[in-house]
Image 1 (cartoon, helix red, strand yellow):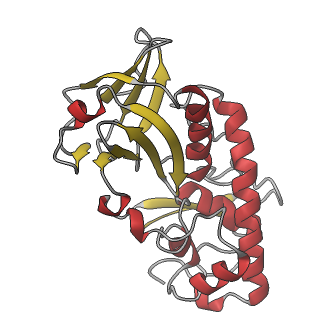
Image 2 (cartoon, one colour):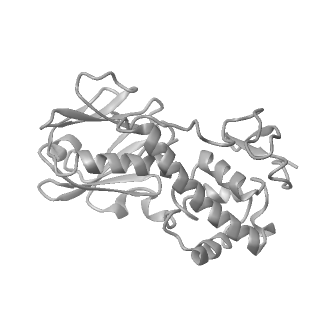
Length: 278
């Protein structure tokens, strides 16, 4: 799942390469079903975007927002969810996956493709961001929230700390992979109850969140380059490293299947916490 670091680098690349350009044409592939393409304007997705100019691109949490100037200002909002990716390439380049939407750009001739093997993500065409499902339910971006607001927002949620970190209503942009990395950096067990955390541990969590995400952006930028469909994660310390040695203490990294996702952590570096069902 693309999370804040990947989407931030995608935003950087697209800002350099497509802002100010005109969408010469729009193609909806056979897979571009109503599950993926959502026209909230009633104007027609392809019709409205054809001839429109891309004026800005920004990220909030795990959404990418394209401001477009058509016959009226509109938003193209991408929520990639589990498997969605964008691919910016020449028309002849091999598809990075099942294609649902293609935006044709000229000078130079390129395609901005939305690919999604699971058809779980969505592309919304909207007049207002308030009309996009879940967009306005998000909390502050994980890299913009202050320490004081983080502590205050955290106190309003109950349950296990990993589940709270990945809940976009608390902070936006963190998914399964980077929650594991942040908690490892903070030396906190992922199944610790939020109410059991001390003030010192909450501070450590906030600092770990910022450090992990900022460092990840730099590593993703290096590994992704201009190939925005890639998701370089070979630098992660614990996520999807079950059975491998912890890079900090050398202990074996544990993997727990819970809540339809794998949680990875080091029992030595991250002691405590009740496992699900216990």
